[in-house]
Image (cartoon, rainbow, N blue to C red; front, side):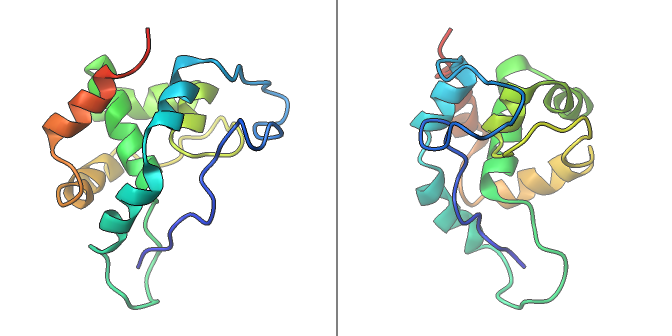
Length: 136
């Protein structure tokens, strides 16, 4: 089962996201998040899920793809990717979270599921190309 995110996190439209963290709207991860056509990609992503309303809802595209962009950008293992996301509010924003948490948003094994779900949407080469678009 898949439930698309109703609204993607956008710091320009909603400066109240991440209360207390005061994210810098010109940070490179926030800029890259604004360049990616999340909604268009999500249409392809959700097509790969069962239409039944049973079972645990899947993580959204922005979380899945965002995690893999981070992984490729820094050449990280799955474990290190999850740790980096857990520690960094900019990375949490990039994957679509609306507030900072000290907990990992998903487990390490979920990265494998993300890869399988992303294959019909985007190749690893496409993900690497997006990761390289990150402003310096």
